[in-house]
Length: 460
Ligand SMILES: Cc1ncc(COP(=O)(O)O)c(C=O)c1O
Image 1: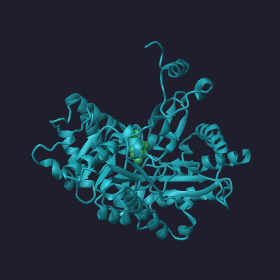
Image 2: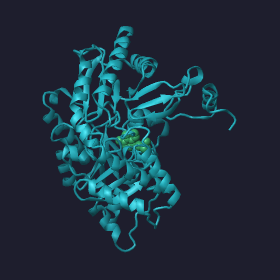
Image 3: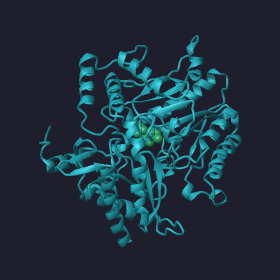
Image 4: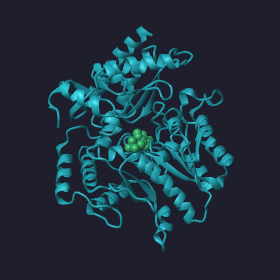
């Protein structure tokens, strides 16, 4: 090492010289400093100067049990000493077996078979590969297309990006794998006028758009529909009543697999182990990552219905897919310890009993002229910012760029709140705090947002 990592300015210089940040306009740091987070405790993290921040995004929708849990670090250390690594290619190890068994017990319906990955993108992409391979096993060779929703984020690897609905992050990488098809999302705040009067009607219309897409594309070519329980990108779109039930019927009618992408929504974000449970549907595949280990180590995967593995249980049939670090023993041990914390500290109960308070606290912000909509469920909220509340007029691209990137991101960070100011759809602030948060943290979030949003409005 050529520098002293305890020296903040040396750390800063080395970061600027060697570290390439993800999804980051690096030129921002030609002049400004890169934020450096050094440690965490509960729902708070601290930077290299010792300043404290409320982690209102659980890192990146990850730190469910909060920071600094030594029992998770100890589980990792113990497993690394015992068996640090062995692959799941033809072999198994006890922690992956135990974790698969536990996840099968928590998953809805007959989702019983667990295929591990290391990340969410790999989970999403693995589900697409599995859907294609499954249909080939069944003799339905033409099914390869995937339907997903406008501006939904499903990951960054080429396959996952083809499923992602955010054109802004795709164009540099075209051509992407063929077969990605878009349908409307469930943004009720901006529902088309002919269904804007009723959430139920809107939900049926949005679900029926999936049927129309299947018919347009040719049912014999469609393999899967990907949906998050609450769509993250765009600012938390919960499903309208009846939406998922209708989607399930449509998928059954055309023999299309329903994939619940729960990379964000699983493991307590919505007060349940899986979002599908909260909204009362049983998908064919659930993809997960992030919260399973609360980020103490990386781990992702998919849980699939018995029926989907069935063709691969006979003869030469093999799912020809694998990832070196998938189901890593250390990550599996950490995941088990993480789930132990969920049970011992009743984290699902904490979310369920406090979510109404979280919502009510955030809804106080609707007295501000810039706050158009507060939406979400559980510990997962989006606050849409508008130029005119009465007409729901949004900001222009230039205004939004200034508001979110030049002003709010820095102002919120300076004020001690980590959250996301996002304009991949209409401009929103996103919140997904650790599941240990209670009223005092919601108040802190509200107060910081009120102050920063008030300043933003006065400068527009
Ligand atoms: C719904 C969803 N799917 C997939 C992904 C990709 O996960 P990862 O970043 O672990 O590859 C994300 C990441 O935020 C996500 O939110």
